[in-house]
Image 1 (tube, rainbow, N blue to C red):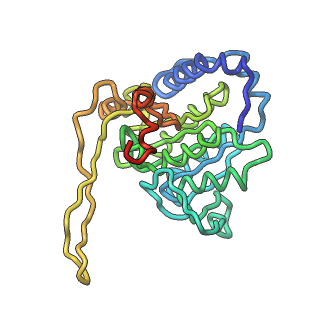
Image 2: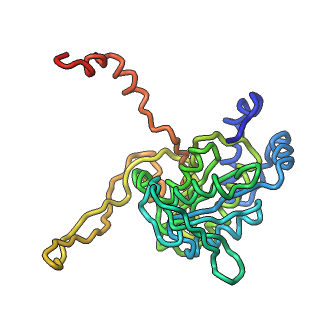
Image 3: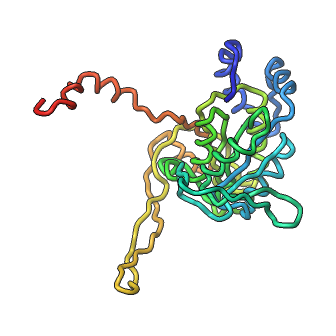
Length: 305
């Protein structure tokens, strides 16, 4: 867990806004936004900067390799990811079995380590068993093949892995790339710039910054925006195919789901913008919590009440 002074906490809100401004400048146009002197000096005093990198596409995915290479310019990188694809696993973990850790690639120049686990399970294991003495400073999950905007985020293994980092109080980033998932190199540079911005500031524990790039080249980039999560840009439908051995077999397929809510990340993503959405680990719906205070909750526990 990361502890912060009262002064750090009072600077947090303005510094995150500053980080988004600096990120937008570096990703879209040639401009310079310098971090505040006190936050820059604080970041420089925290060396080395430990970055845990994971994903849900598996350690062999080009997205994670490009991401790790770029983040190596920002800090000290540890790569721990599932050995195979675990898409759509959200924040699930596998209980009741041990973890087998393997070097990747075996025998060659080490690019990382993989585990027979879900993305969230890989983060849980790495934080508990492989973290440096000072702990990881940030968890970065991705770069995913395919977007994770809107309600799809709840099912995403990419976002789920970052949420596990947030659960442990570690600032976390989830990165995804759509449009055929070509251009991981540019996406990795964009994400690394954002992570470098977080390093110079005081991100809030329990928050995941979900970054979605609709296209994979700088020339395609139309802009950057911070938007709330909303809508579903795809939905899953099932069609029955020929059964085998007496069982009915259904095959999933993806269909478009629109229109999108005005002002949402799904709308902005569909319009060609890079979106940044802060997601909070705490899912509590405060208005409903207040409404429940008017119920006779004690009566629920009494037979015949």
